Image 1 (spheres, one colour):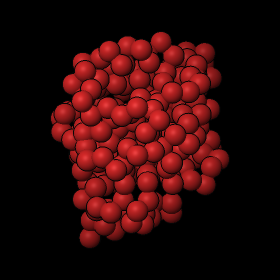
Image 2 (cartoon, rainbow, N blue to C red):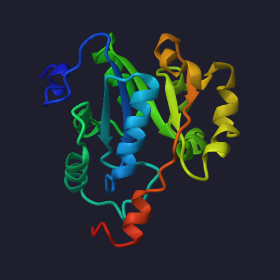
Image 3 (tube, helix red, strand yellow):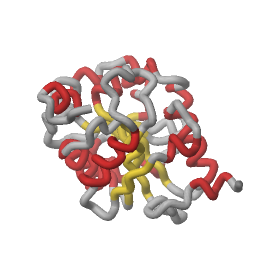
Length: 207
């Protein structure tokens, strides 16, 4: 099978010139906070679409509290009330485990699409633990959205210090894709207190 045939599901078709945000996560479960940050990123970055990439298994998270992929996909589909949002299990079908490999595969198949990696401030702090994180930063522009209790720490993190020469001001966020990576911007806006962890702890997401 042609590798490009992998990307044939409804909503995954891409066209040259599109600005597409990639929001990876467990979505265990998807919640209103995901919608909030997605819309924040769309406005700030001028995105045409955002892909919610439901991960088969985050290498940095335990499998113990992880719902089956099908259930997490269903929760994301139920919440994605914006036609510009594409819920996808593309990592499962590509067979990629790490973000670098996923993004590299997408860029190889769609060299004329402007991808932006969307990352929470909490993940920015952990970024140096990611597989090939420096190479990922050199592969795709990154936008960091605020998270309660983490936004300032993210700006002071090792990854932020490393990428400081390539960091744009918030006022230039829509120009992010015009910069050859590495290119980073910290977004500003209302922080959502919702988290999948709190929903599970409140027993609002039975596994």
